[in-house]
Length: 421
Ligand SMILES: Cc1cc2nc3c(=O)[nH]c(=O)nc-3n(C[C@H](O)[C@H](O)[C@H](O)COP(=O)(O)OP(=O)(O)OC[C@H]3O[C@@H](n4cnc5c(N)ncnc54)[C@H](O)[C@@H]3O)c2cc1C
Image (cartoon, rainbow, N blue to C red; front, side, top):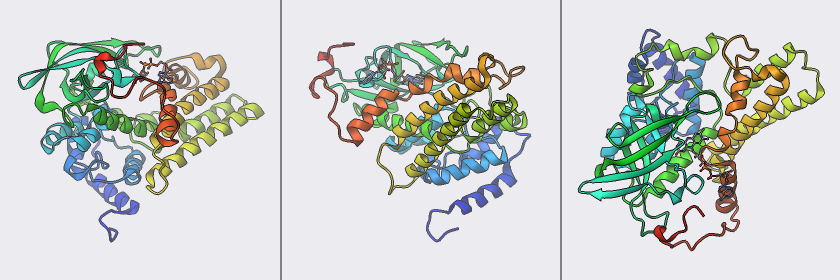
């Protein structure tokens, strides 16, 4: 252990290796493993200690990820929006009582969350949302429609933002609730994407209820709380580095009672295709070599350009870890890099495989369907978590100090704004 309270990367590696030697067991179910992992702090090391984490920065959390990925153990429930967004937001804004109620079931994966932000008329202009919350005793009655709700069909709880004061300016009359999905008045309808899957849903809320005690971060302070969630979303989507496999949290995800080995070793031991990054790049080089295209100068140039983008993203992520190097735009830049990487991986993959790249399915296709999957999914990353244009607006206005976009007076009450204009 180093002389300060913060351990070194070597300390963390050694400590976690020893813990895994004693505790990783391939005969466990996902539920049993996550229950064992949750109280150690390794399930979400960046959370503060009062929320079940270790209070470590991104650099040490990356060491935990690396060790778990290298050992091919099942990682924490990090594929869920509870882990990625709700837990850090609650840790930052909620009372200790709320932290104790909501965070432990996120860390042990027994409760799954979704993000109830976007509406048909409020995406980029999220603060223009119309879903309303009206006080009724010590409860709120919620009515409105949400859309593009990823994982809504398997979520138990939602991070809901709703309008609690239409007389206030639009950013000031919003409140952030921890909202129960399984109740009368909530209808979740999956929306099928062109990948053939239904990642997201539309959610209709018709006089559903949420207790006063589930307000996170204070009445009418929801815009600040939602921005914390969005900041974690961009930082997480744009981050690079090795990550262990995960599984879907919550009972409805149907992973909890399956063996850990159904998920933990999926990629490497079954010869599957690696995730976006250096592993997939190497897979492309192998495919190009097999197809006899590795001497094509144009393809070589595209591959090197793609490698440069991966490296730029890696170095940007390193900069985000160093407080002396931060500009404040790292989450936005990381998110922009990620959506560019999706597009470039799609283009290079289709150049290598040609028509074969259109084939879907795990077997009997040259890339096990990975390139077709990428091609069909690649428009998504430039939209979710705030579109590429919105990331550029944020960098322009908040980091570079450029003039704000024209719009109504800042103090105009929400109810007096022109809707959908
Ligand atoms: C795969 C996927 C998963 C998602 N998951 C979730 C989820 O779990 N929860 C959730 O709440 N939402 C989710 N979303 C929704 C996502 O956050 C919104 O789609 C996004 O914010 C854009 O909003 P919109 O679709 O209403 O487009 P709009 O806001 O209508 O934008 C349309 C176009 O206009 C451009 N535009 C809009 N305003 C400006 C401006 N001021 N300056 C420049 N250009 C502008 C946009 O960049 C875009 O190109 C998801 C989306 C996708 C694709």
